[in-house]
Amino acid sequence: MFELILSPEGTEFQQKVWLELLKIPFGETITYKELASRIGQKDAIRAVGNANSKNPISIIIPCHRVIGSDGKLVGYAGGLERKKWLIDFEKE
Image (cartoon, rainbow, N blue to C red; front, side, top):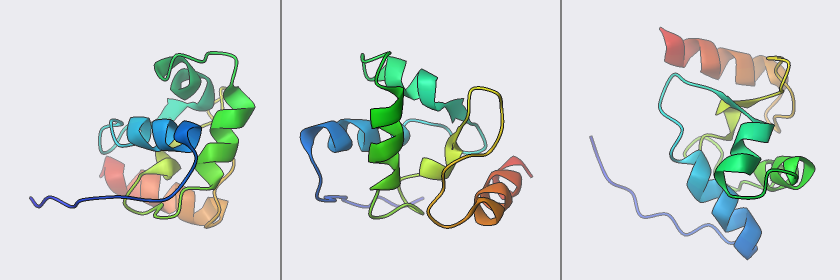
């Protein structure tokens, strides 16, 4: 185990979303709706998705762990095939 000090640049809202992403346990997923609720803005689902897409260090701040409300893989800058691979890898 190691510690890494992170300081990605972004808006206050983006920072809030990214900090919440760090709380998603390895091997687990949540929905964009749940992420919006966790930051106290349950109706900000699209804004959360947008902040997620602006994550400058996506392999460290695990934005791939966020999925659509219907359980489908949506929205990953690295491509959905990579998102699927990362989620599957973490579940092993």
